[in-house]
Image 1 (tube, one colour):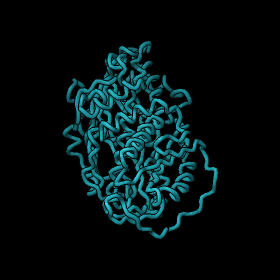
Image 2 (cartoon, rainbow, N blue to C red):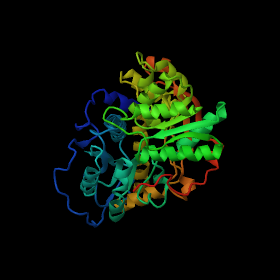
Image 3 (cartoon, one colour):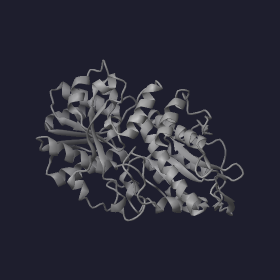
Image 4 (spheres, rainbow, N blue to C red):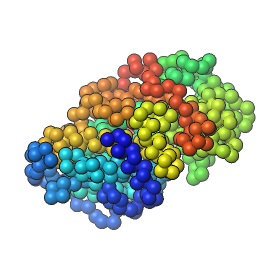
Length: 457
């Protein structure tokens, strides 16, 4: 199945230039940022009963076409906003996962149809489109953005609908927030703690500068960096938490942040923002002669830093150490090698985000599989099935997840430590070398998670 998924994903992707088309996987998409119709409030539907290929009776209500045995899954995706490039690549992974699974007979005879709405990373559009999708899909397979997802939590609870957030905010492991969510990947704050532990373990370092953009991504990661510094005994010589001001093309205050970091002369710089923020501040800092190890929340970095012709290619390859929440292409495992080889054979530009799409689709698959096995494909039944799952096998594409039990049992503590690799990028890879697979620093293993590191709202 893993090989089938990989081959189908990348071969079919050759013809997928737009998220606004209906592909072989039965993907319905809407590229408008605002809803075109008014939705009526969600009402409780009376369950119907049907059977799967196994012959077992299955209850259904919203989002299930019994006659054609189709399960509709909703996607609240940013396809035109600030994370459009990232989410677009991730959604390709989703689309062709379902295309291949459907072609192979689906889940006990049920095929899956994606129903995608482009939120434009706008919170009002996100909520409005959620109301629409709650009337036609069995669950939300992707909810892009942390404040956007927090904004629909009360709706999810009222409707008994399950959602998969596309964000690594630590609140998704917090019992006060995640009653209707299934999370994945090491949260931003834990990732920061883990990578700083790795850097200290392998380098002669004693000081750290912390800088970030405002918002959940920057502040959750910065909170983890501060927490790690206190635990590991690193001195914070500059605290620029939330002080990077994002502009249209990059930070509005790069000189201010870079000058402050250089003046502090840290051994480590933990900077979390958009990749253009990192690039601007890093370029100015090394231009003034700063020598340090650089890291931060993984979306802060881009392989373009080491691309041919980049003015920072050589120092970036030397200075950056990062953690990513899925298995990198450079891991060399059977599942990842199959994935990588199929992508490159199809002539598709390499990106790690196809893997993330396959990881999210696998989670949805496991949830629907459990709901079908329980005989309940209603929205409430899918929610119950998702929240009951223990060891969720992601097929080697990412560390397994746990969606049941207490918060510490559910917390993802495993990351993959990577460094930039210009030779891999030049050879058509994703530009990373793996230096430590499935890494957990001892302080992260011992960490007692009691709630979100940064409180949203």
